[in-house]
Image (cartoon, rainbow over all chains, first blue to last red):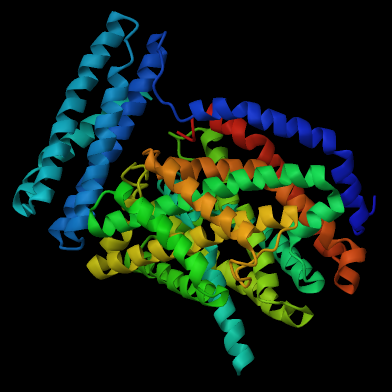
Length: 168
Length: 409
């Protein structure tokens, strides 16, 4: 094996033609599966699966609320432009609402999961409303109102984080 | 003096050109989730791209022909076609991601929905490719991309616990909440973001466009061995910023708008404006490179006249491929597909296609028939072989990991 000779690599390529062909076919076959990779929603047949989806949703919405809190801090310190603030809050509001809808589309498999759904749903509705309101305030450049929401959003964020920790 | 200026400009251009939307997304997302513990993947990707870009640049300088041209001639049309199909697909995904990145950056500056900016961005990319001189294009966007250097300044302004960052970087572990498959998925994404195939096509074809000869080898090496590492430093700075600001808050980075938040926190509105300019410049520059790379790959495979130095009348099919690729990318993005998800997707498919790009580069760079006395020596071949094994392992694991982790979540 003389790796300093280009012919060695050439033989590797030519000897590996079948392997390359198989890999290409396998990769192309994986394309539809790969497309499904980003789909988060799906059925939950057991309480464990449902709790895992609930944890993922709580984590995602907690992430959105924390980002919104950081945006409020930046706005409060005049460290962000009105346009960027509006885009950031729009992004997190869309995220939270998307995660909420996706979670609601999963049917709880038992009464225990149903109770978990109710518990998380209350938090998700509150987060949805708070983030929509923040976005509205940001679009109206109402910084005083924006700051007033901080305490309730912090509380919501903490509750979501606690639930995520409890379920993970 | 003039030569020193040319080399310096080349290095600066390479710094700006190293970072693209893949680095922006992957570095920021991993910093927020894994701290600096995946910085080794950026370093590995940097070493890999340095090894192979140096080979591709040398092939261009010595033979006066770009790598893709030689792949078909040396390895035959069938292997060349497999290579072409994989590269075209990955280039197309990359172009979509970059155009999406420009639109999202402009949205951040204007708060006008990014979908409205997409056709305008596509048109601007095409206009620059059509009208601007190659060297001017490379210099303007490469140098403008240097504004991203503000990320390094922002890291210092946030006064981080350096010991914590160093500890994260030297201990390749994961936070308790994260899974190992997700850790490896993001490691491969980061590795692929440094080794994106279009970078090699562009570097190699660009060398031919700029009429590199053996005399330009020092310039080529300065770009690769000085410019690229500084570019990787910018990617690490972005990772550090999200590790400092988002990791303690257990917040995931899923939007472009979040990438700018740590810079605003550190440097205020001025920092925010500069970093948005940096986003626009780097994604625009990379969009130009990815669109040209599609034209290069296809035209070189079929033996058509190609290149920006050729007037469109003399290379009509090359320019047509570029136009069709840009229009295709705009149309797919206009369906509302999330540009950030496209970026993540493009990185994983890049990883899967990496051996198809880099094995032929190694084969040709170590072939004395083409390279004469500039053929790879034993050390270069050893490094190339080691990285080829790493690249192949990443390629095999990329798609299964994406399916297993549901896109790294």
